[in-house]
Image 1 (cartoon, rainbow, N blue to C red):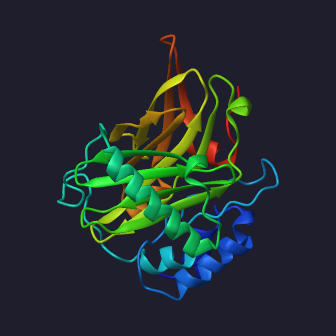
Image 2 (image 1 turned 90 degrees about the vertical axis):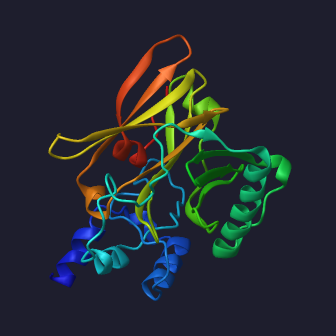
Length: 269
């Protein structure tokens, strides 16, 4: 492998604003470290919708290129994430609050952000098999954290200045995070976001480039926010096509919303 070219190829889709101080500092730490998580080469931040900073906690193109030579198990058939299910289960309130506290503390330690008042934060969570995933939304930022089967909690993503419900309208969508993460079992993709007032369900469809494989994941939707995660190999992150379908309260649907496009700018309506 030509490492110089691999670095350039992996970095190409990354928006320019990841050079903001928090993301750059994180990049420097990841490049100097061999610890998890390892990011994906996909676009993980917004490009130029409005001038705000967005730091994604798993963003380091150099680390991606360095690990790209690994041979990973086929997550569709191997034991990795064996208990994962496309349909989520509720996360118990006690587990949700405990994980949210740990997530906020981790985010504060990594980015030096002031911990918000508990009353000012909105927390959502889900279980899939042996794994738990939570999102924490505050007036100034949103973050998500993933709990592995062994209890280890990893900060997956963080975004500054999420849009408000009035801006989204009835059928709008804001993607608040869509990183790929590496754990001891392999790679997985995590997604969090905010939806309009008429949206009651979100389905995520992942298709292989060849079109011969697809997977549909039903997201957890609570109080106008959604979250979901699914296994995805590192090399699939740049070849899969991922889209969202919204189910509306009146029985209607909004189909075929590109996840990559939503990372560039929210859909407002």
